[in-house]
Image 1 (cartoon, rainbow, N blue to C red):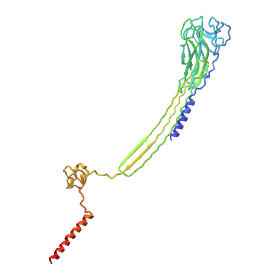
Image 2 (cartoon, one colour; image 1 turned 180 degrees about the vertical axis):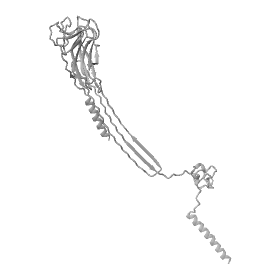
Image 3 (cartoon, rainbow, N blue to C red; image 1 turned 135 degrees about the vertical axis):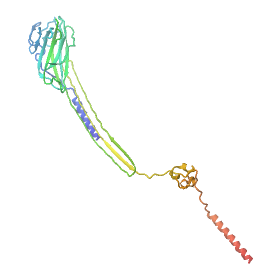
Image 4 (cartoon, rainbow, N blue to C red; image 1 turned 30 degrees about the vertical axis):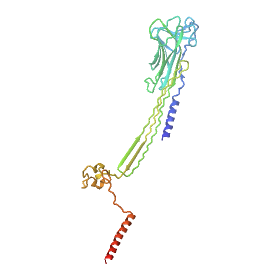
Length: 343
């Protein structure tokens, strides 16, 4: 039973280890993700952004010159801009729905141009129009871009499951400032979820009975339960994305019962003394067992201090007996001679 339980436990935990290995991230398709459409000349501006919907007074695409970014765009030639007249936004509803047990990671390059001060912003991931996660805490260096990362992981019962995913880039306050965006990426990774259960149950009962008046019973029951739960999440900040969360449960139960009954009978041996009441009864001056014999007069006290064992009757040795017989014969013979002499 123990060997079988060990094998089942090893198989369960081996399965858990395999299931907890990180899965590969899949990119989600985004239209015009790097804002390269339309094509523009250096310093050119377009107030239309194909694939994206916008709201606000001044939002569009432009090809930055060295006066805005000495190193150019973060990816390709063009970047998106939003002037701060909140809630100015650029948004795109994707052809992918929110799925259960999936880890999503949205990454966007946000820029602070050299010739215009950057204002507050937010990068949002939505499903069915409801914001799932957002971030606007990254501040790039002046004249450079920095990566904003927005992660979100679903479970089995997320309220927005089945709703279309949406990306929203927005200005977070009304002002004369501007914020730039480029290279929008979204990845999804299936989260391995498994429950492995190993159960082993065994019952052993042993019973032995011997004739007697004493009974000993021992019963043992053992139950072992092992639960292993692991969660692994990995996030890369470069162009590759990996996020994995795994939960696994392994349960092993073993039950054993052993019962033994021993019964034995032994004839009691009374202690010495009057009526078996102990040696102290042989010198207390009482008839403890009411048999009319007191202390050493009671045969039951024979040999128990202060009662000594009676000395055996003297036995004549063979030579002494022969001497006695001879002496009696001599006496008898002398008596006979004396009578004959008188006659």
